[in-house]
Image 1 (spheres, chains in turn orange, cyan):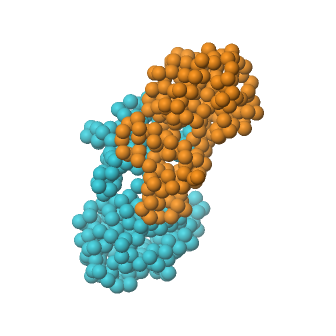
Image 2: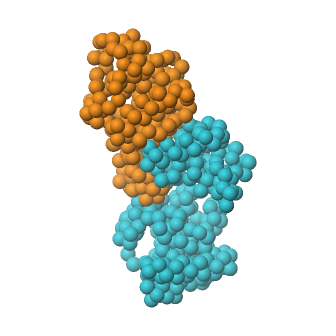
Image 3: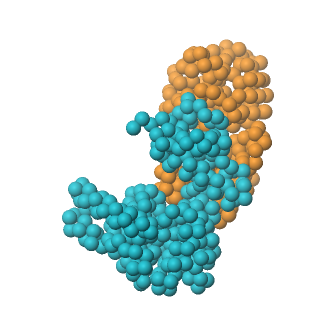
Length: 220
Length: 288
């Protein structure tokens, strides 16, 4: 158990149950309601850059703690540059077959923040993998999202069945999961959110989202 | 569907692997190459592989001998006209392939199925070198290297391929331990298309050559994503030039679709002859 850590998370976080079992957890609304004295706040909110920025700004009014924020869907470099309280970042929203996650620290010499992140997530069974120089996004989410998006484009064009594509990627290039199985595990809406963010930040059409992916992700 | 004799044209790595796999299915194989000496060498290589499998206890001596006698090296004009299947696994050159199919049509029977192991050319386009009534019996059979070990075979139907034929062949492979995935004819088929951004997006995350970032991306995708190899390690293994060539082919075939756009770093590596393991230097250095 790490003391002096407050966790902000909603039940949409993939490790919500494990976190709640071991740590004090507050929802977003609750976290904004009072001023607390903690060393670290671990922010697990699932927000894109702009909303994340305003959320952290508000959060900083309620605490003097250092903030470690989940930037799975955000432009990491921009958040580091514009949110002084954020000292570390993690990416834990995208399902990892090996229960591992990427993390970074703003100041590479900040061993304390590194230790807090490593200990916190190891305690809930996740393996940390260091990401040295956070720029646009964490590596794993952007690469896997592009693979899954392409598989949906292939379906749009009637290239093959989902089963065939999943099997082909597992047996042709040894992927641990087929792209559709992977997409289901991650959650299609997360993939869409990240691709939107990447397209918005870079302005590049390569991040255009397959309409088949949207069709299957957006449910009323 | 019964295959008594399969002709494999092209005795390089892929052709030899495909030939050996068919031999191990107890099918007679005729191996052809425009370089007859190479075909003989390749045939010797296959026989050594069979001996090695026997030594490991994976084949009996009897099986091994039977497979060896079922393998013949022949010239194109000597292939059995009534063979059930011909698989082309020659160099990725469209014109050479098209000429071969035109020649083949004159040699084999109308019932013979003709397949290409191409990884990059459209099946429909290749089939246009055959007369119209032969195109229903033409399809893509894309094996993965090493063909005796990798289970996947992409079974690709061109515009005029008989879909029932493709289904039957896929079924035939599935019954023999392969994983046959049927797909329509589109650039890169399944794997070479869907996998493009494993490399492309990693190259963009890297931006410029930086060994620390390259190692970080490889480590992350293996540790977090569960991939067996990182994208840069894999490009080095495949050959950065080969990877760039496939990327360019898919990119142009999709009319310059930005999702497939090659990255400057790939081109830089190729221009500086850092092609991967085969040149002992690619994204990584290889001493031996």
